[in-house]
Image 1 (tube, one colour):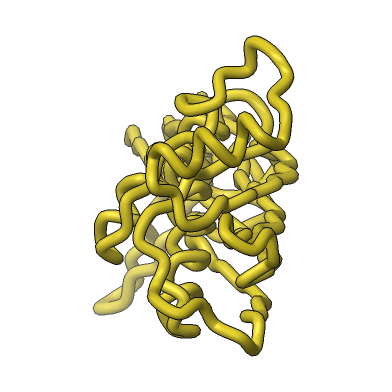
Image 2 (cartoon, rainbow, N blue to C red):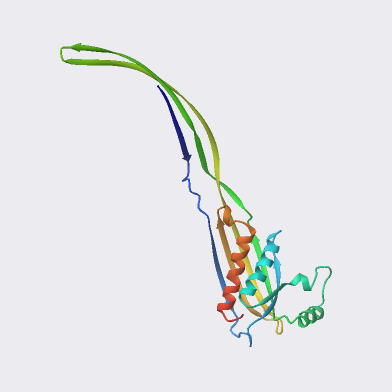
Length: 219
C-alpha cells in the first residue's frame, strides 16, 4: 500500500503578513492668517536620495488638488551658486511667489525582519502487513502484523516582514513678511511590500501637510 501526503506548514508566525500605512502629524498656524489664501508656493525639500524627487512630484500634484501652484525651489534658484537676500527676494517677486514651503525628512529606509519559515513538500509511505484467520464454529478471529515506512521530501522558505518609518518637519514662510505662517511635524509608518516605496511614503507626508494647511485656512 502506497500513500502520498502533501503538507504545507508555517513555523513561527501566521501565513498572512498584512501591510498598511499610517500617518500622524501635529501642526500649528500663526494666529494672524494671511490677508488672502496662499496661491503660489515654491518648495525646498531636504531628504535622502530619490525620496527628494518623489516628494517634489507629490507636492506639485497635491498642490493642484488644493488649487495651489507649486514649483521646486531649485528650478528658480539653481544650486550653482549662493544667492544674496536681494536676489532671492527679487526672484520670488518676479515669479509671484506667496510663500516658501520647507520640508526636512528623516527616513529609516526599508527594514527587513525575519517573520518565520514556510516548510512545504510531500510524504511518501509504503505498508506491508500479513495475518491469520482462525474460525471456530460461527466465530472468526483475525491476527494482523505489519510495517510502515516513509520518506519526506521538503523545502523550507524563510519569510520576512518589511517596514519603514519616515519623520518630517515642515514650515510655510510668507514671502512678504518673512514670518512662519505654519509649522508642523509628523511621522509615516509603513509595513508590507506594497506600502514601503518612496511614492507611498512621500504621498502620505505631503497629503497630510496640504490637508492641514487647508483646514487651517492658509491655502
